[in-house]
Length: 279
Image 1 (cartoon, rainbow, N blue to C red):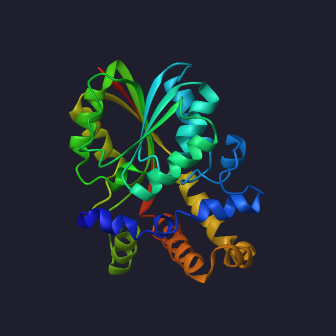
Image 2 (tube, helix red, strand yellow):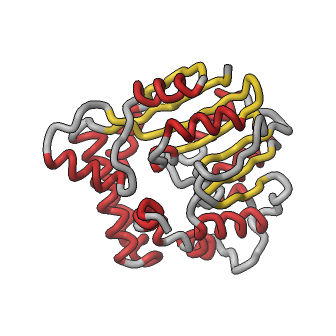
């Protein structure tokens, strides 16, 4: 296990991947029961705004029935399943962490979606993606974990068919770090990588890989989301402690407070939605 993989496993959500089964139990499901994608949609989207970013990808890339889509950093497969369910496309859900991959496979099987969602596990940089295999690539708040982004974008370029498109949503640095407090918060947030690119950095990396790029600034939405999540935390805390225990809840709170500081108090972190076409 690399040092980066080990650090990523320390992120609070990835230490408690089995939480999804507690959530399903609350909905009345038992072990191995068949699942409905519509029930999972409120539980398995491990990013901001639930299914809204996936809907944005569908619209921006015009994903249609039968298309072949690669999901980079698929987590437990929530966006992949929702995408396949809504568009009837075929999704390859690529995930680094074995525990996430295992749970994702289980949930996809229980949703009877193994014919439309294929799970693969491993470092996306080292994974054989094939040449011109995909019509589209999707990623939501996962690419910032990848240290060598230049290599990743070149690999994704090669994996796309001529005219293929990529859409990813990502955290972006909005300014230079100005204090030790800002640096400490950003280091805690990043955890397993050393830097956070700006929107301009991402544009340059994509263009260097050969893409034609459009950037959508969604920093205001990130600021609103992180502030609202932080301000409403006390209303949910007792329920969360009952379901998941103090350790998990305290870990979430530390991360929620840090994200609120970065996006609101410091104005250091925002969001970008990047759409790129293979030339």
